[in-house]
Length: 141
Image (cartoon, rainbow, N blue to C red):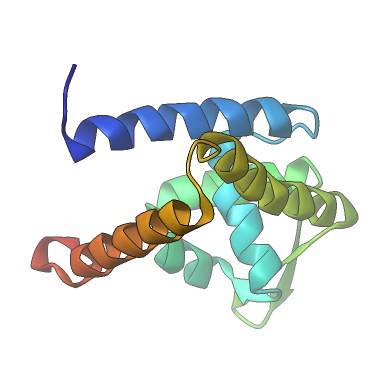
């Protein structure tokens, strides 16, 4: 078995994606739509350009994702001047609430073998590594 961070990151990503997809499927939301819904929920009235930049998405992918989320009734898109502003619909607010709960539930299940101090230490160390990666020249956008 591999003993690298990359290996465990991949295992956790697959586990989280499968868990989240199963939970969101009942709402008709895909794993790929999770983060746009969360972003708009936390930034009501944002523009698509803001969403695209904040999530580090390709413009074409962002356009297709937003169009699909509008068509499926999760997002509302309103033109104001030259830009479209995004907000959650009622269905989108429900998906936003479920999406937040999915993170907490997956953490609780996945980290159940750790006590409170171990969980706190793990999250502290992961945050430390994340901050280092965010300032790395290869992570700059």
